[in-house]
Length: 297
Image 1 (cartoon, rainbow, N blue to C red):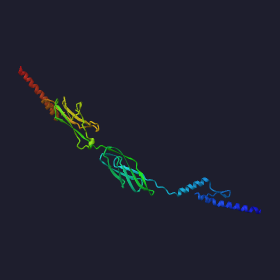
Image 2: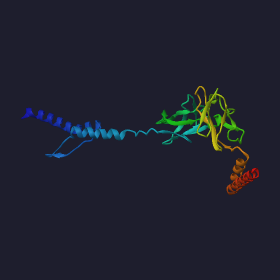
Image 3: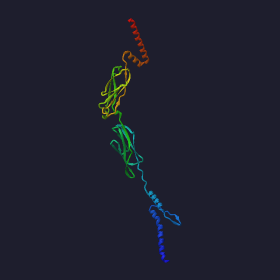
Image 4: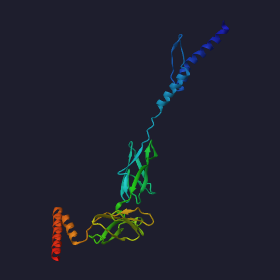
């Protein structure tokens, strides 16, 4: 009996130590003790329960990470003219501090600014991709943030293009009379890249005919009287510039002869009076002819 007493004491000490240190080991691993009565004794939590509890505890201790703000670039217009200034503005999805901006214009140029806005003008027509890169304080550190690309379309300014005009001499010709047309290109306000060098011309006479010409002058004959709409076109000899057309001119071709000219003039002013006068003239001419024949007998 006496020899078994030290063994019983040692077994009791080991059992008590295990019961007391088990919950503390779970807490050290980040878990929580789980005590449930099973057959009159306490049980330790399972491995899965301990791992889940530890993960929840670690997540609760972590500091929530702030979201990174987004940067959006906007323009007052996406279609502009060459040489025209365009204003751009960068906006944030949330407030930031100590931000600086680098605007990249897409034409090889860029601008730095401490303000979220800037202006730029494009010298040449085309399609440009614009973006902005900003540096701001996020989570207590400097973070570069880039916006999405914004497309800007730049068109040719019509005021920079040459203009073509057409004139006729004489301004009020008659049927069968030679009419000289002159095409004039005004390039006084045009940059060198838009100017026409040694242009070729094409004249539309309004009577269903037309004719190309290397000269800015051409002569044409109208067989029938009437109103014709005439215009001219010009094309650069190197095909660098786009072809252009003049505004049409209204050319009135008068009939030949005194009586027909008088009739046309009266018809233009008062159509009924013109017809009446024409009828009277025909009757007078007929009466004079009949009288001369009678006298010839």
